[in-house]
Image 1: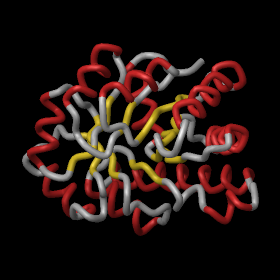
Image 2: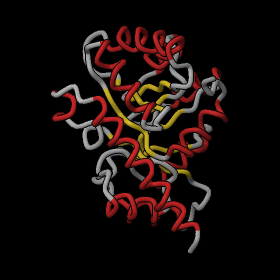
Image 3: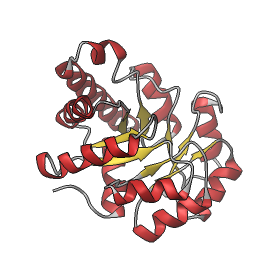
Amino acid sequence: MAAKDRMAVLSAMMDQSVIPVFYHPDVELCKDVIQACANGGAKCVEFTNRGDFAADVFFQVTKYFAKADPSVIMGVGSICDAPTAGIYIANGAKFVVGPLLNADVAKVCNRRGIPYSPGCGSATEIGDAQELGVEIVKVFPGSSVGGPEFVKSVMGPMPWTRIMPTGGVEPTEESLRKWFGAGIVACGVGSNLITKKLLDAKDFKGIEENVRQTIALVKRIKAELAGK
């Protein structure tokens, strides 16, 4: 069964470590891509709120997986305001991610027991997010705010911080080793993982293999870092 409560979802996100980030207006294509991610070991998927009627696409996809594969944990990204967060939560979102920190979104998510990962770009914003009950902070845009060095700088005085960067994370050993070595607990990866080439070719097996290899790579890196 799918993880339903806040703590179980947070645990699943950190265990998975790589969160595929994806949006497409075609419902059937979304189903195929998300199933490919799940088959590859990424049960937690962030569907970004972009484009006209994105909430309707999300609703149809989430309703489908509730029956077809309840182990899939659908989250939503690009959430900037509380009303939009409420719509997606009502439509089945199990976690909410945003490019910025919004206290009203935090309140809605806390009230409903939904993990909220707002985008933060400074130690002050990260502290403000934690004050609002955020467990996993999204660093965004990851490469623009200082990359792994920014994470290291934050983790020094704030070692309790759980960070999930999006933007600037590549599914390569070099990139992932730098980020996880800096202390992140998870990362969001979009077009570098679910590439345009694979999407255009509708190569869902290719997407599945990309996801599987990346998750295996991260698990190995994390095990090696833990052994040091």
